[in-house]
Image (cartoon, rainbow, N blue to C red; front, side, top):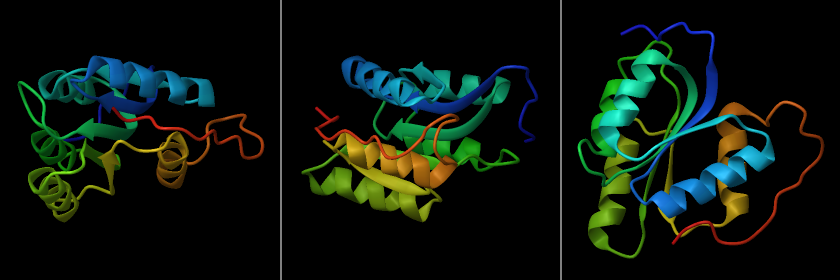
Length: 146
């Protein structure tokens, strides 16, 4: 599937059914200077990526309507395929196993919740570079996860 060409450009698509966490992450990334689109389930994310150019997808794995692994499968058919970051709560064998599965299926990185804000910023900058206009390191610390 070819990536759609649209006038609007989104650097980061953030997908998480934990609305409070997703809004917090989106706010942090926007304050950092990134353009962020936010959706709360996998099906909405799939619809979004078929209509918009996305440079990076950060997605929870366990969500209603379609999970993060289904979204990753769809993205792998896009040309170009944006990097995918799989997120999941840490602490359980099942969730850690799902992060490993996501990595085996092509996720560029995995992120175990809770995580530090600095870790999120480093990961995004590694995958798509700093936002336009960023000068020097301005990486705050502190947890971004639940």
